[in-house]
Length: 216
Image 1 (cartoon, rainbow, N blue to C red):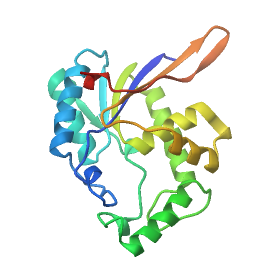
Image 2: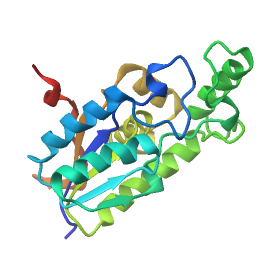
Image 3: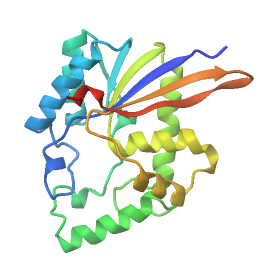
Image 4: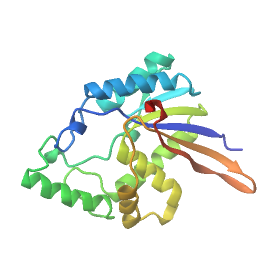
């Protein structure tokens, strides 16, 4: 019988680039606000049951996960599967008002929802779906049954879209899903791999964007 899994998917805290009108760089670290968010999340994580802590290698995810590791005593694993969707390198750090960067970004945004369209070093629709499948397979086969994963907003939403829509997921549906969903920095989304009455094991969305740790 397949093993039941619970996965806490966490978006990293606010990065320096999140607060700027620039196309975010791969290496953008947490901002002061992001570090405070990570500390608050780490307090919350002490009340969650998980046996493995995994993070994207990008600094903002690593720093968020490090706060959780310090608070919970969990060892931190790193996986490239959970990086943010990779944008064209030529636009990283460029202003939103830079006309050349903006044109490249617009082309790349189309590629993310278009099978077979490539723009420089950016991931396209096929790349994103393939990586989402690999990430879900990694989580399903992990030797721990309860995991916390620190990742990124667009990639987490890609995982959710793939779970909810399966093989019917196409570019237009992914575009609509991106447009109509949003994740707070350090918001928690819960996935479960489980069966149900007369239903086979499958991934199921349990909770979306829980950020109650910021409630006043």
